[in-house]
Length: 356
Ligand code: SF4
Image (cartoon, rainbow, N blue to C red):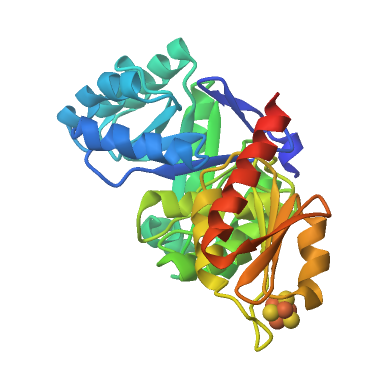
């Protein structure tokens, strides 16, 4: 199963599945009922490349905040609901674009039917989220007591069957674990088992560096295999950090075409200017740029000349200066203090020229 073969769903016009693309998602970490903080965070996520934002809907006040949050933001929103079907109905009524709920956990059949009916009326998809840490005891017992791909698929089957019996197929599935090997195995099994698009993620992946490594290992493997239609990298930190990792991950597999590429050397004893603060500033600047521009920041002319000159724009350091290149052409030598600004101006200029 490749991502081009999955059954597409649409979240406010954004296609997930059935194409060789992968949609970036993230999640807010403030109460939805705090409209201002939620909207600010969603707008910040969008600025960092997020395509779809998810919010936890814990109570009625959260659900009631949805229309106002929609008014103040521009990207599609998903309501994440556990157990309470009334919150799902209220979220749908408030204009939410997708629901994350596990139908096997919302009690009586009529409750599921009501949610499915409301989703059908408004063309809203449902994501079923399986988490290896909260598998039902019956499936754990059936498969030896510890989480495994088979138990995760059995759990998903229970929920999927309910939706399919109600002739509902706008489904997306996730099989998250904090274990890299289990994540890969579960998604590989799911890709063979279901026609539905897959939402990739390593759950509870840790802080920035831990998450970057685990997510790249697990999700990178899957993306390379053609598995995964939408992705959420989980980071214990500001939600925008998730996008920084996820965007670069998608760029590595040619699944994002608006993500900058920063080439920078590790520096060594040959360096004669203060390069690392410039790299840091460029990282931050490029995180909000939506263009496939390549920027090189190199320590010295030894390897730096070639790398810098191959990039759209780059610098190769000299003695307290940097040689500024654009598309292989040396433009000028810039003093240390002006290098960051000079790079930013060149980046902006290139983007402006591309847009005109
Ligand atoms: S580009 Fe120059 S400073 Fe950077 S690692 Fe290579 S030799 Fe060292």
